[in-house]
Length: 114
Ligand code: 5GP
Ligand code: ZN
Image (cartoon, rainbow, N blue to C red):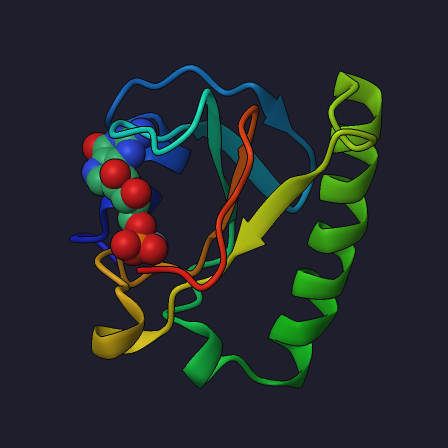
């Protein structure tokens, strides 16, 4: 996926600082943070969106969620709370078509979203 922004970040073609990395994913700060903590957890495999994810992709996403849960506990903000978001396609607000979990924390989240 030569033209994918997140694939370029993962490969190092676009230099970025990873706050977390394991065999399945990387995490880095969102360039336009919506909260004091705003991370993007991105699988190393190019999966376009939740809408196109197949059974194998869901195995990856399941493992990612478990690791994100542990990350939040280790970093000490799980007790206060945080939000995980996946934007899906146009009306969902998806801009980058390489699936990612937003993790936002550090302030009171509102519901419903805008
Ligand atoms: P989406 O709207 O697809 O769910 O989220 C894409 C996110 O990627 C946005 O929150 C946007 O701020 C972030 N983003 C876009 N370009 C870059 C970039 O070059 N570097 C980083 N770190 N984040 C980016
Ligand atoms: Zn990609």
